[in-house]
Length: 224
Image (cartoon, rainbow, N blue to C red; front, top):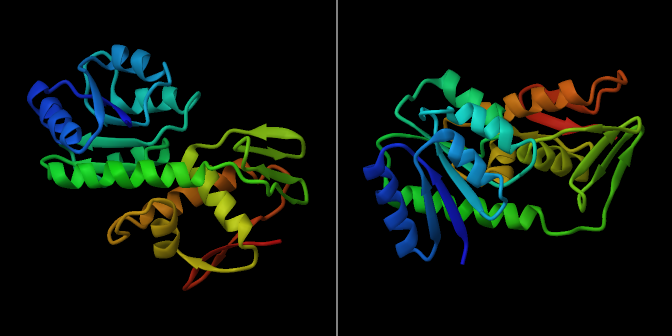
């Protein structure tokens, strides 16, 4: 049974989420305070986190920043604010999805199932370590090194980089990349691909090598 942690200060919303998830076979815990929610999350006992952005004690942005220092567990952000800047910030910090309140509980369940399945598929141990010049990508350890130095990556940054590097010199559209890595309907959300590509480039550009190129009118490709 997959285990979900809900960090939400609105008890009615949290219980609604819990009830729908439990009906669909998930085990759920609820935390209503940001700092205690983080403490519970870092125990590493959960398959996915559902986190409200605005929380007492510590907001969702701080929580995911701290989570991503230790865990790559999928995260779905929930917020009453639909501002693009909040959405881009959340995704940039490592969230896997962002839903605006009010939302459909059935859609939330569908997204939870999709993200857990995709995370499990992408983290299945593989044998192929990719090395291109000074860059090494190890899928078993989910580790990236550049010129011998460890490069921290969020779960989605790693998945995106590994997918592109596994298909060198092949251009992929933003829509294709979003569907492959995030597994949801890409319409209206492909901007997150550009955000993640930019963050990856910033992290692996220290040697002056250009690993990911923009293919104008198409998308991106990994150059080998």
